[in-house]
Length: 437
Image 1 (cartoon, helix red, strand yellow):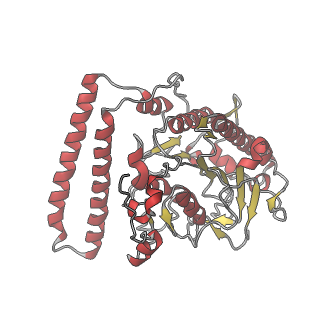
Image 2 (cartoon, rainbow, N blue to C red):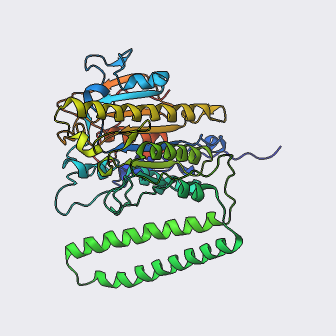
Image 3 (spheres, one colour):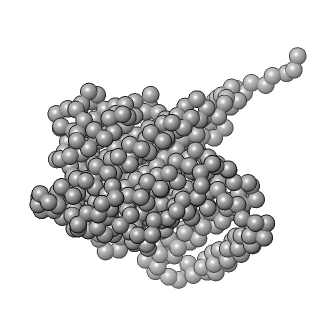
């Protein structure tokens, strides 16, 4: 009989380690933090996150359920009626906000960061939820994350921000996303890509070395700026190294054909649908586990809904001033958003992975940085949270005057990924009332 060694060492508590070092962020589960017999257990199923922000929101009176009907068994609102087939797959939130995230439209950049006062001078963003996940789990997939957008004002808006507060640009063309995910280049193209990656890493090393010498003899503000810059350099170095490792591995094969890109910004809804498809394909092939999608409605013209153009620009309609004609057109747009979300839920529900639906393994956050675009308020945000293996089918209604922190939900997301996280941004804990199934 073979000798069996059983460790008598007491497992190291992740919570104890975090508090002992004064850190209240997240760490992946390490072997030293597990009991000896648990180390041979089967790996946890993959979890995924899709964060969607429509930066003009939804008509509150059509979206929110009655404030008196909370918990399960609530009456669906007019907009939520479009999702009734999946009412047990999502939770609707009311009375939530990002504390101190004000400033109207600039708040969309903080939808997944919750960094306060985005409209103030000298504002510096913080890391977004998807990038927090990507930094810890991104090595498990070809792409640590995907940052997508529709009609985005490039260079000014994104949902994804690095630890140094640097904006990650949105990819808007579904064809380019498809190519990135599934189309393999020729041997010569791969060699050239490897050469570019190596050159990029060399340049990053050189820049980092040169800028270290600047840290002596400069003021506090310049040191902060230099630290932000160097953090961005280190983030890019890591991304280049991971990209080089994956470059020689074959990409997954899919039956779908490359999509055709809508050429006109008015084809807004077609773009949304196609990028939902790209997100689903990315998750289905486990190409990434963190995706963001910014629906830049502020930057959209008079869009087409069900093949018919509305008569006014999306942004102008949001400032409806309770004009019946504008409200009617805006409602048509909002309902189309709900129909596309219904299709996304259905597509994910239909795909199976190890006996579970892809929806059960994918956490979808759908919402807005504006509670009411007509008045630019950033309180009482419209939010849906779907999938991910939680107990859904409920309305979690919080105080609509004194709002509850939405970043609490972000802590639930991180913990569902298996990350030890007690805190994210302005959270005060986990979201009250949300439980794992």
